[in-house]
Length: 337
Ligand code: UT7
Image 1 (cartoon, rainbow, N blue to C red):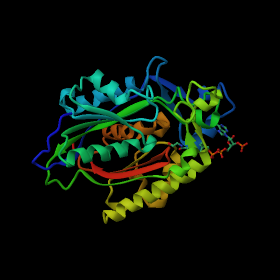
Image 2 (image 1 turned 30 degrees about the horizontal axis):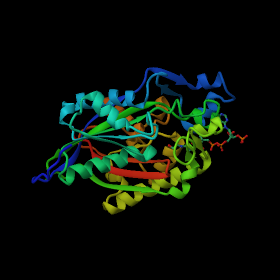
Image 3 (image 1 turned 180 degrees about the horizontal axis):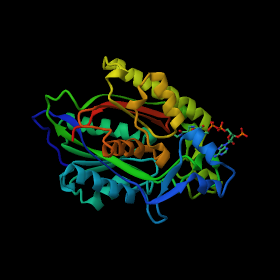
Image 4 (image 1 turned 90 degrees about the vertical axis):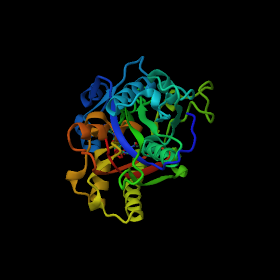
């Protein structure tokens, strides 16, 4: 990206959506067949019935490329016109290069800056803030945001408390420069992190603390989670970040037309929705079909809401997430195709 400050100000606009999920469906029955669990336990504790798994030879960037193409098709924008490709992910192909660099190359985004953003399941909303900032400060016109995750290689297949939760997928949005006089766009963001809780959800091996080349227990190369602590944090964080954002905007929950939360667990969402007093008919969920796809989960739900006619242009949508870090993030944005 070569950028020169734009004279004309612009308002960032969420202008297109798109998603890609692998074909392979892994049902609760598939877990029941090989571990001590039941469909009843999984569904009642999580709301998940199935998730998608990528093929062995498919990595995160392969999913990101498919979603990126869907977003560009939806936008009618050429890859050559992208100023930046940002991929929120916590399951990258490699420590480096970034998934974004690999994706930008494969879609032909030759002039785009490309980088990953690591805020785990809060990553999509964090990245929207980054994209909107680049546009509203005058440095970019078209920023592609693609949440992409392949968890099927990074969850311990023998750990019944984590393997059942996660799935693979990619989804995202195009953020473009819009009318500076618009009262729509992104109304605000609340982003945060509490690294003192980082140990509650992590993959211990593979970074500089415990390099992959040194001896380690095989289970330490997989995702590890203190489910109860994360559950407690998640219900609190979702409620607090939303309340803080609404207060800062002098809005009430009734001013929101649609709520799309990080699709980690139906019980967490229901808990937060209940505490916030959101009309359940204004909440869109699809965790039942895809499980937790981390940074892809919010745009995957948004895209499906749009495709089902639930998300309409101009609606004020509250996006709220939480995840490893531990992090949280919320924004209120209107969808303006
Ligand atoms: O993006 C952020 C991702 N993280 C999350 O969203 C996770 C948040 N946490 C959770 O969703 C829940 O903590 C879980 C769904 C992971 C677990 O539910 P829970 O109600 O907190 O269960 P628990 O961990 O307290 O475990 C209760 C029991 C245990 O057995 P004992 O020790 O009481 O005998 C577990 O071993 O349930 C057992 N258990 C299972 N039983 C059948 C754990 N996983 C399973 C399973 N099937 N798949």
